[in-house]
Image (tube, rainbow, N blue to C red; front, side):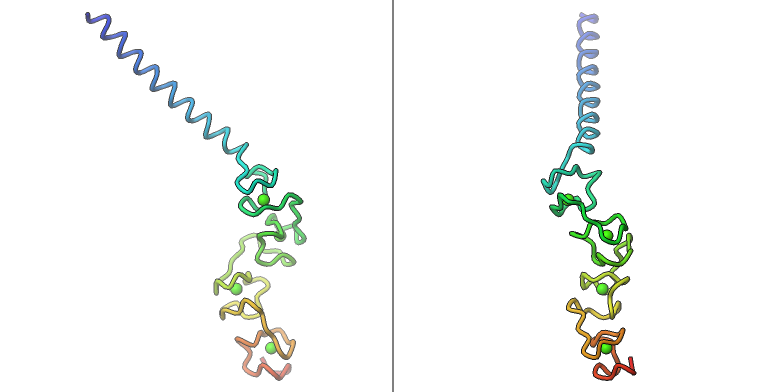
Length: 124
Ligand SMILES: [Ca+2]
Ligand SMILES: [Ca+2]
Ligand SMILES: [Ca+2]
Ligand SMILES: [Ca+2]
């Protein structure tokens, strides 16, 4: 009776261990085979894992693909966007004022949203 019980306990322990190992293997395998955006590039190699971009184009070579880069012509691997207007600080003409359209009537370096004189290119 005691032997049967011991065998039962070992069987359950063995099954639990197998399940644990199997789960671990699936997680590891998933890291290398998942393709969340279905663009044919697996997540760990995709420079935009949640945006379909099969070509992996990255104009500024900062490791973030054009399709999800908030400054696709300016190197900014950190993608910091202080004012949360979807334009990264590195290329935002008013990094502290929300201006997703980047309007800049006088074509100086300051956007209308933060330009003291938006119609005078000599004053920002
Ligand atoms: Ca992608
Ligand atoms: Ca980029
Ligand atoms: Ca911004
Ligand atoms: Ca301006």
